[in-house]
Length: 50
Image (cartoon, rainbow, N blue to C red):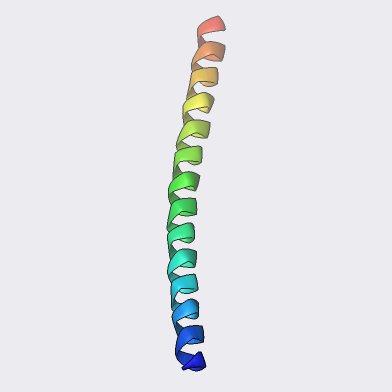
């Protein structure tokens, strides 16, 4: 009985880890998008000034 409970916990932990990793990947892609956007905005400003 105890083993089953431990196994269940481990499974839920793995699921949570998986969700967390997916969330981080989405977060990272969004962050990268923001960085690229800011970079292009700055580049446009610099080019506009020159």
